[in-house]
Length: 154
Image 1 (cartoon, helix red, strand yellow):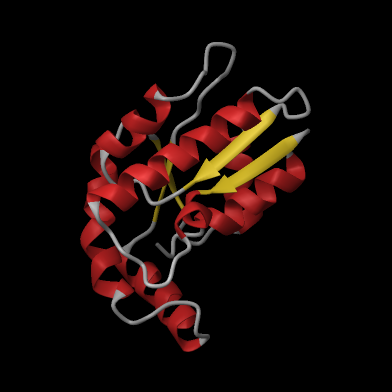
Image 2 (cartoon, rainbow, N blue to C red; image 1 turned 90 degrees about the horizontal axis):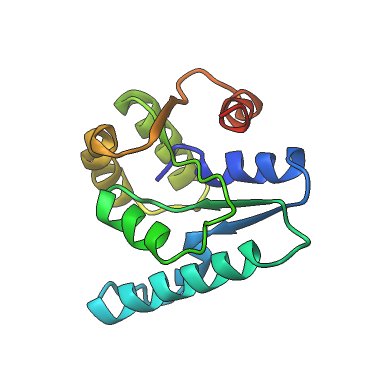
């Protein structure tokens, strides 16, 4: 949360040919936001359905997906449910240091995009991304275009 996933993916959608973008948060935009085994299963099923639909659609050459995936099991569950036989799958984790993350989240809180409880939760997860089977891209001091270009070059 707060590392720039959605903004970077929106930029990638603009720069890659025939691209479609799914933000996993769109599949779990509920009020109240409830995390239960049932809702987690439902969200993963919805994400995989949409991603497979994009993968099977001849109109799209590039399918971009982002979501907070701080555990390898989340990534594996999604990848294992996708028909990627004719695809190149690139798994990327955007990283940021604690000071920059806190600064970004505080700006979001001040503008009403996020609530204050997100800071501790996000900071606690920073180290978890180093354990993932993903390419790590440090976002500190980089523009959205630089980050998107680095991912597109993979």
